Length: 172
Length: 180
Image (cartoon, rainbow over all chains, first blue to last red; front, top):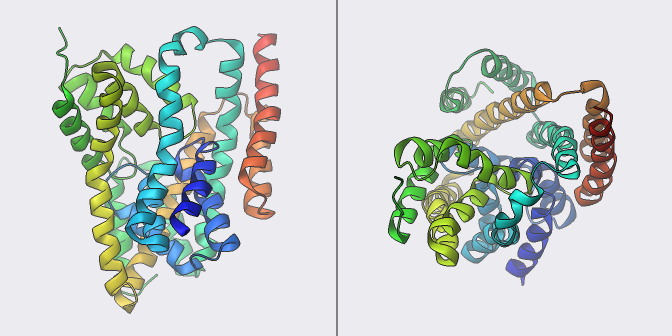
């Protein structure tokens, strides 16, 4: 049953989701597109785009992937799998957090995980570019977005709007 | 004195957080909890967020579990994250239905392509910003490069890469912490 398979795959991923669901993009692509062939490259990119344009926590890209693969049950299974294991763990650990917060090993993990998360998010960006087979115009838009996002405080929604408009006009 | 929210208040408050942000809602969660409803102080928020960010998974979902548990125990820990996710869940499914119906139209394809390009740019920018915030760059940025090679280049499975990476990178961090 595909919903169950989805649940197991995504629950496994939730244990390494340092940096949230965004950091999982490359691995979700590997599992869903390359390994299981549940989706193709184009659909995967489209789902990422839809999740970008929708309000809510970043984790909802998982919901969309689940929906395209296994309908409503798939969407529920994927979302639950991504949230449930850590939710249970955090429920059990929060009262003891004070006792290990600030310990040397705890700080070491927090510091050590950050450069890995950067690598994951960078990989996610290259992967979207590859999967969408960007031409020069799209790369130009990518570059413009990077510069504008780093230099200004414009709300991300403006970027999404400009991207959607340029895409509608067939310029990307 | 901060009031003690009931289940209904938890559900509604986290629903509003879930629906108010694009590309991450954590700042909205802080505003709601600390500034608007005053359920916790800024310091308490930071302390609670510590574990949520320490553990993997969606930080803001983890935070909803923590806040829910704090005020309404096990039921609260279920109701708060469900409130956070229910609205956005319904919206993305609605968008998915539209996509299934019209996604093959050239106009829709073009639009999604444009959004994907912008989304890709936002990811690069996020990686840049997070990378810039790392201290001791000569020690730690090589691990970033290794992750990119292993994940984007060699397409190795992420769990193995993360475990190995965390042992190495965390080991270096542990050693550096001892030196100071």
